[in-house]
Length: 295
Length: 233
Image 1: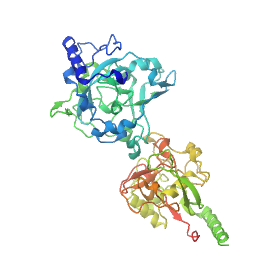
Image 2: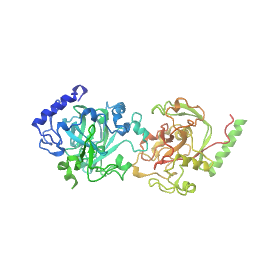
Image 3: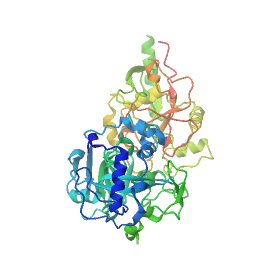
Image 4: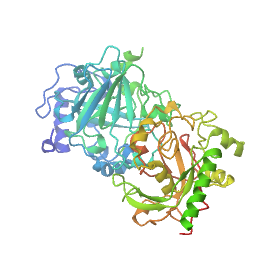
């Protein structure tokens, strides 16, 4: 989607209101969106997960000015500015490991039907937002790449460029570049999404341009930004946080209000831009869809 | 005549050190310091002259550091006898070196040694201990192979404290001869990368900074010494 296709947020939200009169929005809503073809299956209007509607969507002016992207610093309100140096033109994704065809993917050539998902994003720092993403299920890319039968995990790596990303230079003792991973069954789950757009336009840098993962039932750090490498592995991959602080972070990182995680009590979450604090739900409200993965 | 005597003294010292010391002699000369491919901290690449100096072949090991500090606790990430001593502040590292009539290398000395006699360190990266999982940990200080000066693990294994205070734009106006950093500062320079850093961090010209009281599992040091026979030119 090009910048010319950007729709003002108020128009976008009114559009959502229209849709909500005919659809009971679930954790994700399928809809034709600016000419993209909707997927014909997946998240029905009857889905009750996360109980989202357009009125829940975090205003873009808040969501785009309150970001974690430690590559560009630790001040959430400054990331939208400090991340501007990231060059996303001619972006490529290296595919390696236990896969039929290791290759370099040109981002511009990724041709998948785009769809829209409204997801809650629950940060491990006990705050949450509701974001309208556009993109496609990760499963579609995995199927195209054809991992070998021996592959059990998928590892993601973001870009490395300490010259323009001061966090990667100043916090040199951390294992940059940022990495994350999923079990392959988690990665193939219909909720697991590769986002290329947000609020009806392409991803701005602070949200992880040009392509990022969105795994709504896990803490936000699992949803790695600006993916530049994908590797299929047999063993559980070491990730940025499990290697940096293994006593605080585990690989699974599912949202669980009953268990304090990292340095935060996880029973409640605050909403940026509002005074209210709300209860955190198991699996971030997506238990009906994903709890079966963990039986 | 003065130069001949100086050369003779240096040769005698080299023989003695080969036999009995853990130091490598880095001969006086000019090298290109910094890199134009880095941030403002590394730019511009510029010529620097250094007098003769000695640099330890090895990072200071746990076993050696324990003879100096009986309260020292080894990091689980660098725990063998001959693994590098880590979790040591800049002050502790400096004190250790002083106790041996040495000092920490200046940032220029460290970089010249890292670049090697051919100023072509790329080849040496092939055998460095780097880009591994964090759980891999550090190797013994005398493992793998030495660079052209006979020095081990200047690239990878553990980060190393150097003498200098860190100033972002120091290279804009630093001395051409024997630079030893700003007179004061808040952070000390750190060099070399560790076993879990990727290759970008091991580039010889890349500079990093850390408050001198900080301890890291992946940060050690080695000592240097000026050549007392040098000077007078």
